[in-house]
Image (tube, rainbow, N blue to C red; front, top):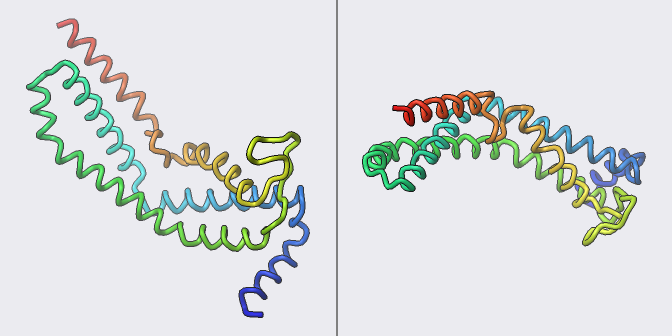
Length: 189
């Protein structure tokens, strides 16, 4: 027996109270919640979230203006937007680099924890649904329960922490209101 097998046996003994339902479901839910919390904190620490959101907002406005100009076939606006295209490509590149940086910092620990837990819970039912689900059934293995917990918690928590691409910390409403006001003024003139 090598060191890894010894580690897994030691971990199974330590986790024996939460190896069976309902303890396993609650434990995996707690681990998933903790992992997402750590990921969100790391993301906020290694990226400039406000800058990313401002860039995303500007890109959204640019794309909207470009689509409207194409729809109206407004050559003057299209020329002006074409001159700004390089700047918005730089914004997109910056956003991608920042997200990649956060992903590289968090992917290894997440993978190791998932790998170890999948070995500990291999072949075990970790949760039970009160009804039969298509393709899953009533008894839920580790990987499906982990995925359900992760997807259920990740998106709401990313919105709470302000790291979701759709969250602009209140900027979206203000920007849209300004845009609508300026459009109304333009129509009146």
